[in-house]
Image (tube, rainbow, N blue to C red; front, side, top):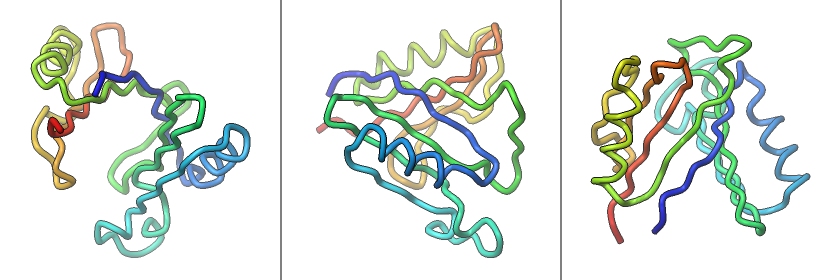
Amino acid sequence: MTTQLSPYLHFNGGARAAITFYESVFGGELAINTFGDIGTEGDKADEIMHSQLETPHGLVLMAGDTPPDMTVSRGDTVTLCLSGDDEPQLRAWFAALSEGGEIHVPLEKQMWGDVFGQCADKHGVSWMVNISPAS
């Protein structure tokens, strides 16, 4: 698998409407996981934890609602996401991007099985790195 750079859009409860709209525009396969899928109850249970649209033209667009303990405000609604299975390269990029910036989620194995981390670089740009097991 090659490394991929994709935009990740953040919403305050509007991710489902947005990602299904983009599906209607671009077509493709849409996968959705809700906060309820991981055990969240109440108002946030039906909101989107993560969605991914893969289009027939090779575009990948991801979106999610903010987790219950986080906020999103105008100006921080897009994160760039590097994903793939080249662990040494992705780890090196995460280290370089976070140097002089701020690590929000350390790069470590997550409940879904991948290694994941999130940071803001020294210029304030938000990045996610997701490393899948090599196939």
